[in-house]
Length: 385
Ligand SMILES: Cc1ncc(COP(=O)(O)O)c(C=O)c1O
Image (tube, rainbow, N blue to C red; front, side, top):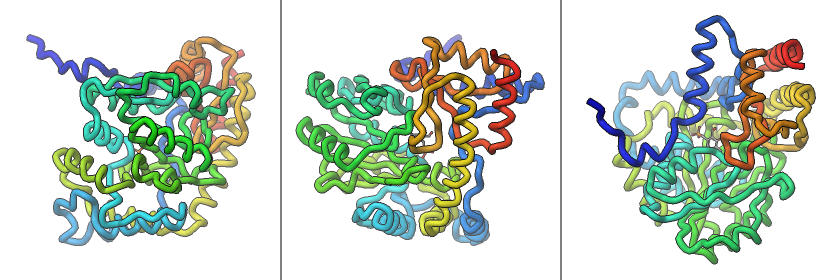
């Protein structure tokens, strides 16, 4: 007997990395010892004070129960102070911030809270695959908007305005952009807010890479009137080396957040309090924190550039975020990546998993030590001609 999965689930595929990691685990079982320089999970530790807070808070007897659906007040206040300190943006901690278990779950919650069957969404191509799958799971139709290298990976408004936008409800946006490392400007955000207002679209800026190798961290909520049409997702995963902890937030107007809460409060029962308290410690770290991790990422990036050079890729030296995005000479970069994996036992992410405009590109992550990256380079040099 076969119990059929839902039509909803039939519309999507398993997340690319889930399948790829299983393949790599199988190779490792057979002794391959694959170096994974493709995935973006920070290998560096969180600040020791963050870990201490988690430990101390876990020892308190009354910290183990269900927690507020919105997140504890002290964490919301810390996010509000963080927004003010880093972006000059006012966020009311009482009703303009919703704590999330990472930005990824926020994408799903927003989709479920705002999209109906038949609605359309604008998704960046290339872009984080979750925008597409969350939108499809909530019944919406995905319209890709092109990001092209010749346009510095920024949206092309002339082209977007020619699209039929009548049923578009959400535009997913992600600056600093993953995988390309492109950054926005306030001017771009302003144009996007005007575009969203003119077309009655909810703009969601997914902003988890804000402080990694970024001289100009921005929030879309910096734009006056942005809260009328925009939400912003932020996360401690990348900027604080806390990817496995699952702490993030969505900021914006209460009229939107309360709809998200309706959905979310039926999905989970709040976040473990020690994680929230550790999040507070992270958000209150001083500027040295980013300086120190960026110093490490800069060193690693030089080694990644060497790998890119050996693979004959073109890449930008001033991209933001924790990846280097390179253009190969190949049409089918996936076959190239598979060859490197099989011959050199090094995994690099193929660009096409981020959309059609990612074809021919590859992504290497800065979340490995210089020594590991060097070993990856040596393996590649020794096995690929
Ligand atoms: C663009 C983008 N958004 C969101 C996420 C997920 O972030 P979080 O760990 O906060 O769920 C990632 C992780 O790779 C990402 O690249």
